[in-house]
Image 1 (cartoon, rainbow, N blue to C red):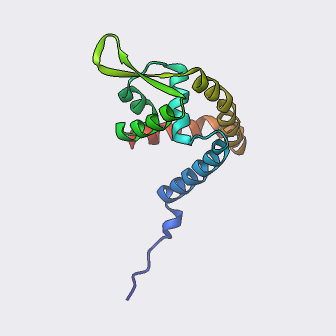
Image 2 (image 1 turned 120 degrees about the vertical axis):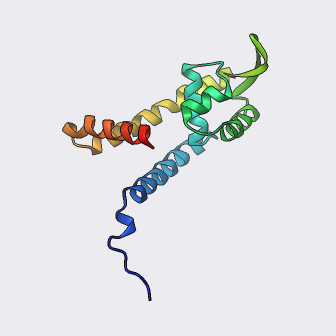
Image 3 (image 1 turned 60 degrees about the vertical axis):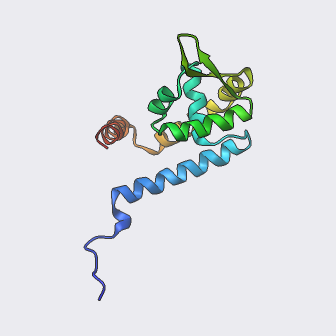
Length: 144
């Protein structure tokens, strides 16, 4: 006999957040497909706009993915000539990742798309709840 749950799993916050995340990823990936990049690759490009010459480890920490995932993104970005790896002049065992001129141009071109969608999300939230929503998301991120 099946046990009837006391509440529907689709009402769980973890389910709803995962569903929202998938929808947002799908939206961004569809928008960025015409530029030949994914949402994950865009985050690497955006990071490098602010911190060109970062290590894979630094990019992974900022983008909140593990180093092997970031390495995969970088491999594809190198192949598309959007970034390049260079030896760190201070530590020859380490590599730095730099935007190419083509990569810098693409990052600047797609950044407004991300900003526009972020504004769309803000517009869906009542103005007096924006700060609370931001604080809640930050707290979840810190705790989890």
